[in-house]
Length: 337
Image (cartoon, rainbow, N blue to C red):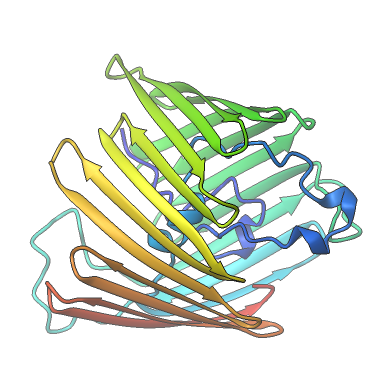
C-alpha cells in the first residue's frame, strides 16, 4: 500500500490553494478577533493525526526549495482561488548518477492548485458552507478533496489521490470527525484500510488518545497511542506511538517570546533500531519569518521568508556535513500568497 506524502499534501487545510505545501504553526491572535469568532471550545483536543502539527511545522514540514520556484496566486472571486507554480531544480550536470532507482533526480515541474469556497463570503470572518480543493502537477500527481462541516459536531472529508501517473497508486479516503467540548472522534474509510481514533482532554493539562487501524489487504490490526501534557501556557510535551511504523515519537515545543518558538523531536524506530533528533527554531517578524533546524546527523537547514504587500520572497539553504552536500534555493511568489 503506497503511503501518502503529507509533506506535499495537506487537504484538511482550508487555505489549501493559498499556502506552501507544508503545515503552519497555529499562532492565530484570537484576541484581535470579534468575540463571536474566537475559539469557543478551548478544551477541545487536536485530531489524532494532527497532534504533532505545531512541532513538525518547524522540524519536518518546512518547504526547502532546491533550485528556483516561481508562483502566481490570486482570487478570481471571493469564492474561487487559483495558484500556479513552476519549479526548476538545480542542474545535475557533472554529478554521478544516483544508484538508488527509487530516488531519481528531480525534474522541472508545473503545479496548478484550485480552491472553491461554497456559500456567501462577504467578510473575512464568514465561514464557507463547504470547501473543494484540487491540485495537479506535471509529474502525474493529482489530488482532490471536499470538506463539509455539517454542524459544530460533525465534519466530513472526502479525499482522492493519485500519488503518481500510475493508476495502481490511487487512493480514496472518507473521514468523519465527531467533536465535543473536550473530545474528538474520527472514523476513516480508505483504500486498503479503516480506522477509528479518539482524543480526550483530561483535566486542564492532559490529552490522551488512541487509534485502532485495520489493514484489510494484509488482514492486520494495529494500535497507536497519543499523549499531550501542557507544562505551562507556553510549553507542551507530546508522545505518540505509531503502530503502522512501529515508531515512538517524543516532542516538545516552547514559545520563548512573542512569535518565537523552539521545537524538538525525537524519533525511534523499533524496526531498524535507529533514532533521530531534530531541533528547530522559528522567529516571525512583521514582514518576515526565519526557520532554522539541525538534526543528529549533522544536517542543517534554514529558510528566510520576506513578505510584501502582494509578493513573497524565500531563500533556503541546506548543509549536510556528513555527505559534504550543500544546496541552495530561492522562490518568488506574486499575488495572494
